Image (cartoon, rainbow, N blue to C red; front, side, top):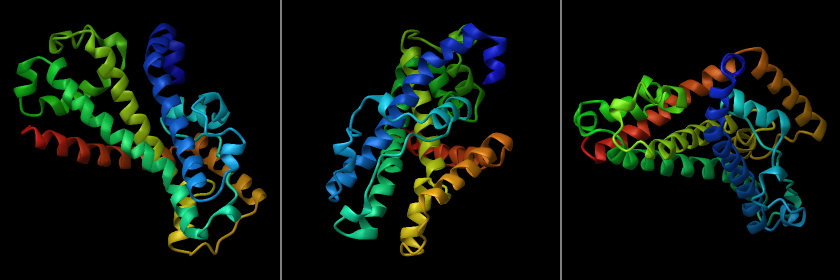
Length: 258
């Protein structure tokens, strides 16, 4: 992304006009979901601190948000939760931990389904009827998908488009689908302070592993260093994202006989 910004600032700006709203919506609803489920489980901390707001500014973590823009996965500022207020201890902690990733997964599934529906209107009939034609345009790993994400390639794919103005909506939905899935799977990694650590601790360790605030901060710094100094996390998430997206996309395409 940094090279993209340096080589084509205007193209980067156009790209971000679609990507930025997708990121802000995904991050905001991820955190609000945590706070809302915590409230239902007896903890009003997030509500009292006005963190059930849909204002993205209240939820953005500087490094996590930059990571979302540059890497496609990251985190928001965690919603404050007081486990002592939970009615049923570890069960409620598990529900709260899963709330954000579940919301992102639901958004991913809905947006993927909508990209398929839009595809029937957006793409020329010959492409739709061609075996693998819709997959070419909607599969994260295909060139057609990538070219749709970047407005500067609009001319190259113009012969495949029959309703040009719908390409703007499709482009946003493709970003939204990809961002939500990346956010979901990244946060499921069993590494503190991510949601996956709480899920791992609650399900397998029965809540026996208790890290202090200092421990979580050290783990977060280690995760940040790992993310930005190596490509290990990126490769793991990319493989998982492509596998899940293809499974869901092919399922929807099969429903339509494609």
